[in-house]
Amino acid sequence: MAWDFSTDPGFEEQLEWMRAFVRAEIWPIEAIQHDIGQADLERIYAPLQRQVRERGLWAAHLPPELGGQGFGQVQLGLMNEILGSSIFAPNAFGCQAPDSGNSEILALAGTDKQKERWLHPLLDGELKSAFSMTEPETPGSDPTQLRTRAVRQPDGGYVLRGHKWFTSNGSIADFLIVMAVTDPDARPHERASMFIVPVDAPGVNLVRDVPNMEHPYPHYGMLGGHTEIVYDDVRLGPDALLGSEGEGFLIAQHRLVPGRIHHCMRWLGVARRAFDMLCERAVYRPVRGGLLRDKQTVQNWIADSAAQMQAARLMTLHAAWKIDRYGSSAARTDVSLIKVFGAQVLHDVVDRALQAHGGLGYSTDMPLEMLYRYARHARFVDGADEVHRESIARQILRAYDAPEDGVPTEYVPRRRAVAERKFADVLAITGADA
Ligand SMILES: Cc1cc2nc3c(=O)[nH]c(=O)nc-3n(C[C@H](O)[C@H](O)[C@H](O)COP(=O)(O)OP(=O)(O)OC[C@H]3O[C@@H](n4cnc5c(N)ncnc54)[C@H](O)[C@@H]3O)c2cc1C
Image (cartoon, rainbow, N blue to C red; front, side, top):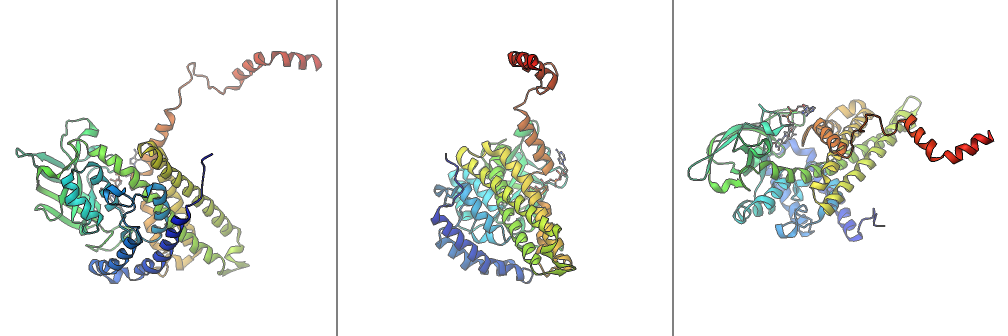
């Protein structure tokens, strides 16, 4: 029997340190986030990042040979659960999206030269990156329809032309990993390739950070901005191509599975924070006939949230374990399951906590309205839930065949006829007794 839900004591000690550190050093940043710029934020981060490195917890998502700590997905899951409690935490630990996913791409598909130029400074926190795939004019849910083109030139380089948006951290990035069509006539999943594009290359026009539910008012050049970018005949050398031409989707697939589960892990931390607020509110808020905790609806919210969070946590850690043991392809369906389920749990728990706080929950005097806005995007980023459900069902149904004669396997009259033959002796005696 190899099932084991315990955490190694040495690692638990690290997690304990992380819990205290994130709460004492990172949560306070949230309260002043609108008063500071990116440069101030970097100044706050610098000593925190040093402490994280000294503790041996920096860039935990990559194996040691690639400059990371190589904790594997299960340990990373336990860490990300803590880091998820604040949007500012992953950056202090060198494992923030999209840099974490991009470093995996570079590790996987980069040449030695590309790794030296981009991956190692990225892991050292000297560079920032963004991933630029979604376009306003085509469905992000079906990237085989991408229109951004990279046209090969006689010298082996490329000219990049297209329009992207929601490139997270694009306005603070040093380089972008851009998905562009290199062969429109190839099979759909072989049309696109990935390119490393320095953000200061002529023709890269950062139009704006798109105001959205999470950041409703225009702001530019801050961590967490989602940038609209026009690539206007950007000239790239042959060394900009990642992997081979046509391998864009293949590489993306390797990046997306771990990237997706890292989000799910962090959502557990967000949900836990909202749950703690829900429970605290329940034990002090007097309403007619008692405290909120005396009301069955609130008791149901607490019990249902606890059950959902436990289920999401176990599903996430199980999917993480499967990636560690069998690789990310083997865990694709598990990760889709937890992506859909985890997004719903996140939304439900935050929604209940906000409801329990009434007007206070809706106000910016509590972080709940911010968590609520954050939670909403989980249902369609990293693949819309509908697309994941479609793919889950397709995978599951592969194990099933239609009955040859169109009669369901469990059809009772037929099973009864078979059982009557199988148990003919018993039925004969029972019949005689009757
Ligand atoms: C906060 C945030 C950060 C993001 N960061 C990045 C980033 O860093 N890089 C990047 O490239 N992109 C990023 N995105 C974009 C994101 O990946 C896309 O929004 C997402 O893939 C959905 O694509 P779309 O917006 O074009 O919606 P569409 O593809 O137009 O889909 C719209 C809706 O249609 C429905 N739908 C789609 N397909 C199906 C189907 N097969 N069956 C049933 N219903 C369906 C779903 O309800 C879906 O929500 C980010 C988005 C957000 C909100």
